[in-house]
Length: 375
Image (cartoon, rainbow, N blue to C red; front, side, top):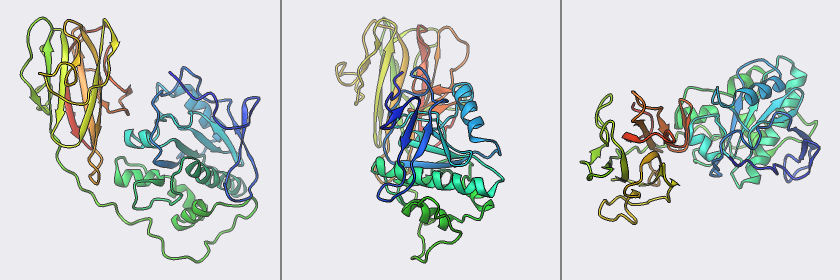
């Protein structure tokens, strides 16, 4: 597990000075690292730099309490973000920038180097300080990672609310807009502030006149069915018949129950997929980008005679189409039921990154390509 040890330039005695609002003069905010995940905690997966995600906590509790809770339950609860803002403009770090947090589903987590929670308060004066720090941290994070500062635009890159993720990817969250509205902040006002930044002490209740916002323009969906074909090679025997997608329940799987397998191939009819296997004898083997059982060098994952106990895969959606990913699960010879479902490099039911159980031979595998889990 590797987390960035150097989070922000100027790290001093457990806190970093984070200069918000690039290209404008704003006060420096101090990042509190007392609740940051350690090097052995959190996801080790790097992110793509496409979105910065704006959240609100949905509970009226001090930001310090939220950070404490996320630090303590990051694994058991399967949820944490990089920053919590609150308590009068304070910033608490939990996850590491540039590494996946678990805050808004697998697509968002994989594409957001920074996710930020705004702690909720009934105090108007405290909210003003929190809001300035929150807006400027969103803006400066976007600039730092070369991400547009437009909020909830029709483009797939930019600053995105959790509501945008719900509307265009998946989920049922609507934050942070309900909470912002309770303090008089409209969507248009929020978008303007993130786009332009807020100078310290310049908080006002109105948005300067500008052209009508287009941030609510819906993203055109173009979902195309994707079929995946895959097969396992039974150790000491032969290739098994290939499986296309899977049937209902536990039907439609690759493999033979209570048997060991040593090679795997996977191919899709749209987009592309890469995959690899973990064997008891060798650990993780190199990634494979094509599926051809006759090409055991470039078209097959595994080594003949070596027992597979883990599988990992990533599906890439064709440009311009609705984002889809590989949902997959496995079973081992030592367990009666399927292990938890995996979704590419995201988290589903607590499983992260790969299917299987170290040391337990994998005896069956199911895969589906979709924009949601069909298990």
